[in-house]
Image (cartoon, rainbow, N blue to C red):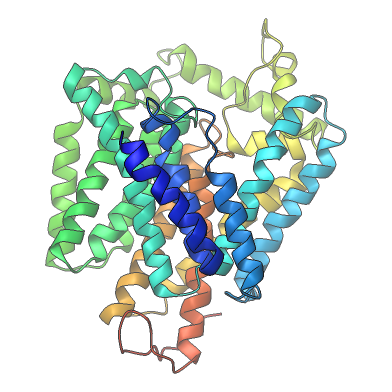
Length: 438
């Protein structure tokens, strides 16, 4: 019933608003991607109901009608976007010589749309307010799913989604990968927000997300989350509130981590003799991925097609025709080649360094400090979290990481523009006067 009362009116409202305010289309598009209404309200919304294509189309129409207004790409932002576009071009070239044409065609039919909307986000998130709203929509949309996963656990006494997919993004590993960078956003908002209600909402969502990651028992996701929170601890502002919040967060995580979670997490550090079959096979898969990459270094064997060669290269062989590599680096390098892999990771690397460069030149004071500090911390912590989690199961088709990279680039553009223009910000009457590192 909620699907009829909320989802459809929201969908229509976003489509109409996107024609006149295309940035709303970007925010709405990612909101629907992360909320997954077809899954969360599957009893009232048809599984084949399409929302995102219409929102994307309305956004593109609005962007054209507005005269393509938005952020001007330059410097780091331009380099990062060019890397992503160049990667896409090489992937299409590789697709034409794929050893698995159908798999490559499916992969590319989705990936070009991911790239398009990521680029639209860089251009259209052109003010502090829009960037901050985007971050809030990210955590609220995914936070609802985190709530539902926690709800099922507390009702039934076990988490069924450790062994079965949640939503349409894939298994427990893939959904965890999608969640990790958004959890970084939740932590950043909770630490930088000034209102207690905002701190409470963001902090509550963060705890739901952390417990969701535990419940899904993805070792790679848990390891990545620990590393991400280490970055948060290093880069967060130091004051009584943030230190208290960090302490409470650690205490809550320790309470929520039950024996099965601890056992699954600690199994990551077992010796070769004691390591379970799933963990041991990862190393053999990575070895196979490296060998395939070296044998096909220029263009790979076709996007999403490297898995077809894994049984042949796997140590000892495999009695199957297809085996996933469970690693982002090798999925990209075996599928599209080493040059494409360099371009792909350069997008995230440049976005990360762009955000980090702002953290070294800005003092987080006033209203500007809230949105800039939040965005910087979300990107600086969240992107490494995504990349680390994706070393254990590839998240190349998950939108949250690309959006976070786009947020980092948009923040870099807006912050630099505010530093040289004596215009008022849309969060208050305090213009930026610092000189930033370009």
